[in-house]
Length: 242
Ligand SMILES: [Zn+2]
Ligand SMILES: [Zn+2]
Image (cartoon, rainbow, N blue to C red; front, side, top):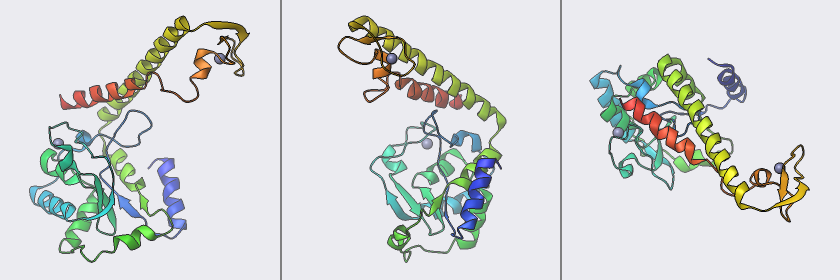
């Protein structure tokens, strides 16, 4: 267990609240994302277990509905509509509507604790579950700490290496695009004879402005080079396919 997760466990047990456990979250970006790709967890569940688990997952009661749809990280061609836009729950665990797709179609396995829970509760129906009451609880009631832990304890090292490599490449591509964007701007704008007022900056300010091109883009506006992150993320998912 890493120290961050350990700290979280202590904090939540001190508060005495049984948090609902989030599972089935997958990586959505190479930037600041604690989740991992489902490709790293393929195999390891027996077909009877899989059947039981997917049936259980599909019976979950809608917990939260989002506007946007999820999408399959395997890019298998399944319609996003099918991946759903909701989180489902049985009152104790919370999962994305599309989680059963990963188990059923891509043989992705789930944490042993959850499988055990499914075995013990497979006849439960959640129709009587009062989701509104759950949502009205004043404190934050879901935690993904155990899920993140399980993923990090079970991921093959090769996936972490690949991920790191792509993260570094994405950051570099982002910085290069950004630099190119600044150079473009700098040839376009007229410069004043004053130094930029941003603390420590020695560039010339733009004409009739207080700041240089680079410092002015620190605030607001389109974040130049941002598309590099999604480009590298697609390349990462493509490499996991092969
Ligand atoms: Zn798929
Ligand atoms: Zn500046």
